[in-house]
Length: 115
Length: 112
Image (tube, rainbow over all chains, first blue to last red; front, side):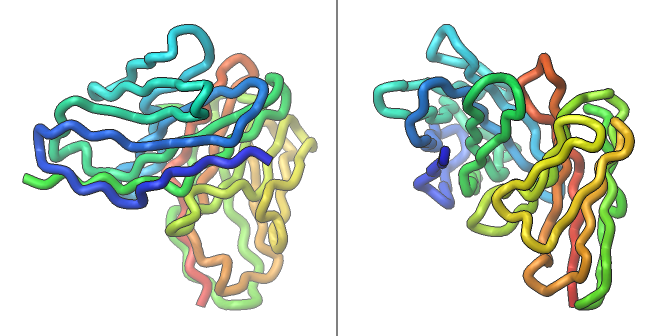
């Protein structure tokens, strides 16, 4: 079964510093990869997604992620974080054909941006 | 925002009582999902539906049942609530052509 690992459960970082949130998934023939963000007491919002093509994917709020097939990774990065980026971030993967796909989520990384 | 409404948003119930959570969509999307979110576990799939009256189990389906009699509604039932089912429940939808899922605002359920 597909699994997703987010090695860092919490990441504190100072405002305007760069950040990288790590995501690794178990290998599969073909995968779609996603990063979602969850602000307090809210649902999940899509940050970005990788379906195919360029391995560098740009998302909302200045985030980007790079798909690395050989390392089965999809790390999320932002060059300069803001206080408003404080939230929980989830990596997710779906596999297989388009029928009956289900998302598998990682355990999440809590990003805390400090002033 | 995608047209997803979860009700109720908050509920406190007693152990052993039945509870039904409702997910309503206005997008006419084919796929609907119920997840539970617990600290350290991320989101875990309870049940999903790929059409009216077509449902299947996820990884944590024990103690839960679902029904989908209309495209727009997906109901999650806890037949006899237990304290281990205290959690935040999220509904999600996905269209056949779209690959990402859209999430509702969540239902916080406390079983006492």
